[in-house]
Length: 627
Image (cartoon, rainbow, N blue to C red; front, side, top):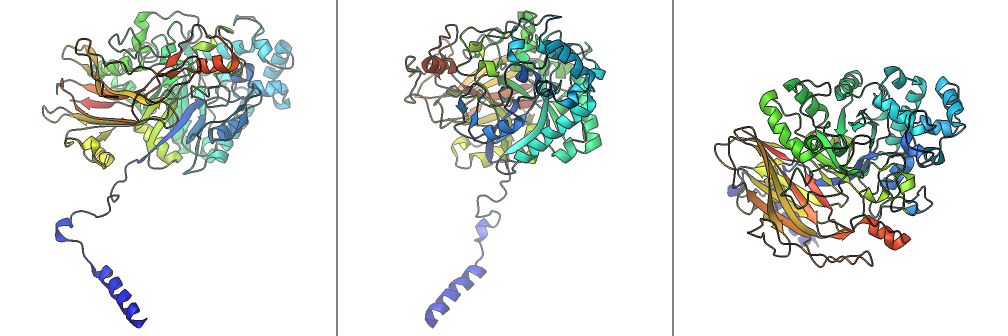
């Protein structure tokens, strides 16, 4: 035994005094040292409504609160308004409940005949007009017309005819409701496990055209409650919202950002060539817009806003979950000249043009998705979709229902999610990633998407086990910027992995937009990775079809085609060092049955006008090249 102790001690002593070899003195043995970049992707929803939103309450979500929304997002089972149990297959990582600031909580208080509301002149006026409750039946009395006893009229008028007095009234109730919102978010916020943000929606419209933004606040209730939300009842001008957020940060020390959504329903106003007031966009406006709106929600339940077939005629995937006939109030028909200001890809190109004159780019935004569900249930899965309102939930929705000017149930899209690359699942880390645009959008699937750009990537770096380390070390991630390095063309690396609970991948593309010397903008799709050893047809320039395994009768499919992972390293063959450009990656799944097919199978409904299959996808935030 003594000999054994001496032998063990000798080993320990040798270990203590051992030195690294001289040839490795400038490196560390541990490959994790110095890799402090974001290594995890987190999926969540930054746009969801509970029963304190005026329209959610009026359309049947009477019971499900923001607390229910957080419980559902964390993976718990919740009873939906239609009486069916609902649960996610996998929990989300983060959630922002973004109830409308306009009349926040007031409709619910009226339905409960809350004495605090009924003691006000607003409560007394509503009781005279609506009786003792605002219900779905009241909503269904007829279209939204002036003078009709329709509660949504109050909401719509208030955001089309801003009045600061209306926004502040009844002020004490607004403060109390907002305090409850913030405290509930704090209650469910669990750093490292689940992030809950205090948030709300600024629901501005201009002549029925959508200018909505979701306002996300980074901090806890102790800071957030020092302020009450600035709503569209005070102003529908986004610049006034940004000014209010300046005051919020200066007065509280907190942080905020604003996320525009549904450009497709803005009739060209979301990403216009002039300001809200019709003024020329200058550098001050551009810099303020990007300070407060570094990301945009480009896909959700009310349609996809990435691009449009008329804007991208060479894009075979442009016609996806399209809502393009009217503005958000269904009052003004959309014309083709409005499309460039309504869709993200054309807005990104427009930003390059505006930057030439303004000296700054007002539309250099990253891209996310979210649901905009008003059911308190964040569902974006084709086979687990609970609709926009309580009256469009499974078993309640019908094939052709249209109510008060809303779109038919079949037109709803099971979309989307926000994906955020961050070190940890905390408010600080997720918020910082959103501000630097290291985010991407998915239309519901949890596709894992990496996208890097740089000048010094060695060949086949994308296939290295240290791909991410190389990506950050020698370049920039999605949301980043590259500046000129002689005439050298940038190289991009992209990796996409399938959602383990969804469809295989069909293909990965890199989409480039640029501005030429004459000031004209262009776009080009490069098919950089195709599954199943397919190629691009030299005559058409398009990839061969991946095919389909969908069985429509059974609303099923198999993953016998497509790929689990697709990777590509690509250098721009048409690069011009003098032309500003952006690049983003798009990963697309193989076909599978759309949510309406699952409803047909389960409930026997016939959504005769609905697409029968869908190819979900993910859009990275761009990487910009600035000469």
